[in-house]
Length: 289
Image 1 (cartoon, rainbow, N blue to C red):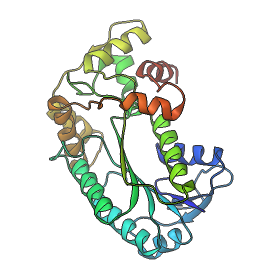
Image 2 (image 1 turned 90 degrees about the vertical axis):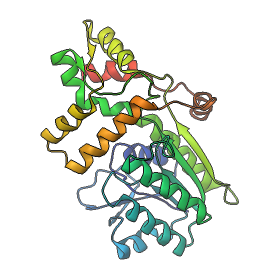
Image 3 (image 1 turned 135 degrees about the horizontal axis):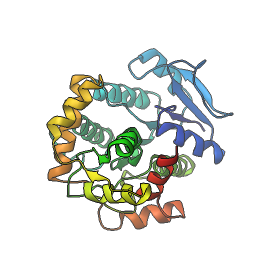
């Protein structure tokens, strides 16, 4: 019984692999270059990517459960559908797919709409799957910690509706637990969706206030200018299509937010057997990194 993890060396996938190995799972990791992949002892690296049909057939051979994680790329949907069709061809029924919260609400945001389409395809193809729907990764803010520290501004235009930010390590552990639950079930478990959220829902002003406490000086929220955010990304050599995608996402932050459903936090806390990591704990660690 083998679990294949795609995106195994990334921010989320590396945590998934780590927690699977800790729990004694037989793990296979899909990587572009096995000689360069930094993986825990006991993980089998297989070369390939999600557009390489022959490599994917090889990677999926003998696999019982698939963790499907697609990067935000222009052909994300094509990658996912190739993987799903090849998984069905290989007789794999058990899947955990990493989507995004409110994929059905952020209808004009390319990578949200793409993930929602993949969710529907998984369900229509009859897979026994769990769709994980994470909110904003608080770890994304590690990239702006220097701006916060040096300029006294929290620059992410996340608005006043609130985001239920989750830590990537919590996400990875939850994904690993769900993979093992499906892997070890005597018969395939029914389709399910799980919102992955943090312990609190934070606005831009809330986050700035947390940084103020952590750093011991005033940090201000930079405001809701999503056009300026797009241009800033482009100046950092982010591809134009991605910068625009991120702008559209932030516009949805402003209009919709990323709000948990009733019971989400309690469900995840019970699943982990501990509290979810707070943004304050993240900020304290980031400030000293």
